[in-house]
Length: 361
Image (cartoon, rainbow, N blue to C red; front, side, top):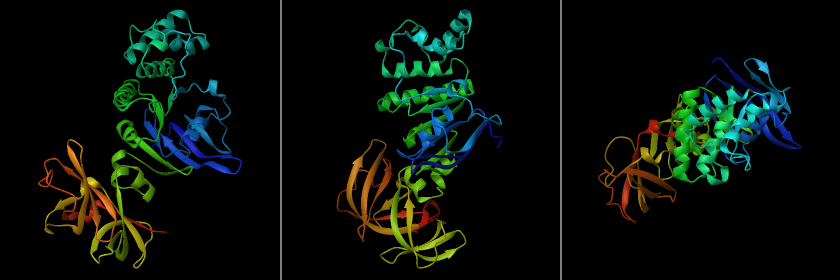
């Protein structure tokens, strides 16, 4: 791909602590790229280096083929939206949005036009004279977004911008951010620890762990084909069962479970060989439950430990004969939905190709 923004071998240390290690990423112009990972994984550190708030220990950042590291943050012309709205409380909405334009000494007529367009973009036309304290959290975040976009930056950085909002409002603003990205075509780098948010918004997602990027891909790619156990556990709901590799055929293995059951044709990640320990990752919605051990696919006997009604599906917590627990998600139309009770002895079944095996180090 043609790299509009190239994060090239970025490294950042704080004393002996390595916050980012060889972060390598190419981002296309107009792409919505999300940095996803747990706290302390290096995603925000990478974003702050992009913004010019921190200097890297090594590496470079190229925008349109030119390094921006020597530029101070105020010269990079990059928009930034934070978790905290950082609005000026003594300025009206219109004045807050106009601030970066006045810093750039733009003519007043042009400022008025740009502020009006920015307010229209975030659907806050008519709020020019409102003070930030008189607005809801969601409205304040829209103002912050308008202020970051008003001067048409080539890149927009967003650091956990919705984490302070409740779930319903967060989903509403997610929809607005996606719409605004589609309308403006601005290149967005978005930091979050919320996998659902990343899946909703992103063209591609970079999974961070311990300062490194473990995998980059679209949401469906990461969900269906996680490259590492960490990615498999972090993206989507997942359950892991212990097993032993009974045999290998190319990129798939046969796994032997503690009760002696063998299942072949499971995709393998890693260099595991026969006789070595492994884990198999199963998605709850790709497991079926039945009262009898019939049908195609891998089958294991389980005992129901709990059920949870969630509207359009039912989560059934089950336990294998050797004591490992896992969750199964049944559609509300499933024959067993509403009929499963604690203590029932059932059979779980899945198709081997939908699972992922990870060799233990």
